[in-house]
Image (cartoon, rainbow, N blue to C red; front, side, top):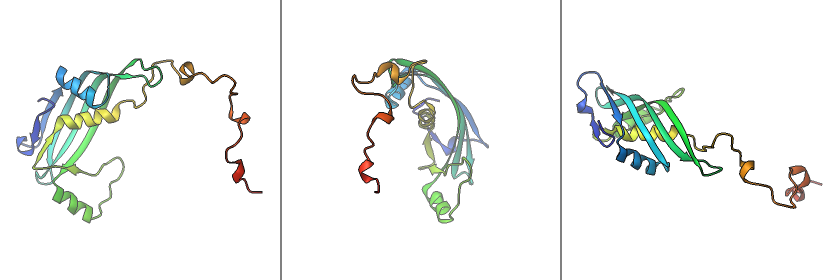
Length: 174
């Protein structure tokens, strides 16, 4: 199965469908561009799709592994990161979601509310990319680098809050 393939609820024969995805070179380049990464060296996922609610909805469970390269937020140098995460989502047609919302069902723990399933179809690759985006470090740093290594204090400006006048001193009650 490729990342662009649309999965239909009718593709499931029996109780579940098991499969795996491995992103091609072109797909990895598109994903890197979409997620503002320097490179996606590898991306693969194993997925289990099950029908739910009388085959009107889908449950998608899986795990993904990726090797990515991002830009260090301090030095702008490339930073490699290994990403591995499990994911789980539920998809229901809009009318079922509206029924659930009208019943005021609350979701407990880590369970997210179901997402919309249009015409019984979903792009499994997009789900994998969404969970990859959630799993990557939003502020990657090159090992051993800190902001103070790159940004030096201005000359003549003393460090420390104790030497600065509080900008709110005029609000102080007398």
